[in-house]
Image 1 (cartoon, one colour):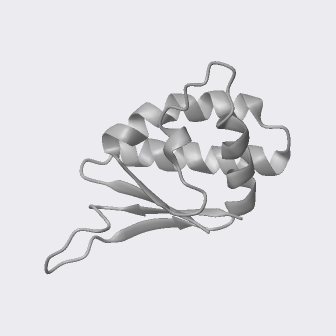
Image 2 (spheres, rainbow, N blue to C red; image 1 turned 60 degrees about the vertical axis):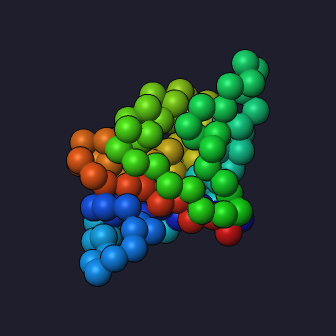
Image 3 (cartoon, one colour; image 1 turned 90 degrees about the horizontal axis):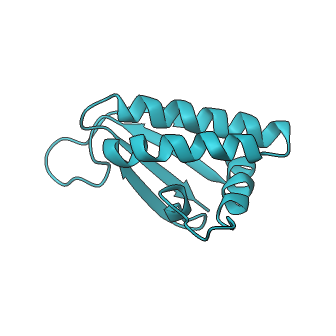
Length: 113
């Protein structure tokens, strides 16, 4: 199981004449990201937050506001990672969340298995 992340300059499922441009595609950390997010989905306080909404088997989309809110969660998740592969995956996730949050109109599309 793995999760890929695509960053678009607009809503990825938007109908109409022009499709949004793909700004970045992260495919290198799929299994490690899925493992790190699965561990995050079981916090002691039972509040999954934005990252808890990411479906490892389907598609999930974040707009720039979701990405900004999820950045702090990803920072906490980074501290909980137990392997270097998970840390690299979450660092990549944090970079994409920050880029999305700073780019008006952009979207992250998480593609689960």
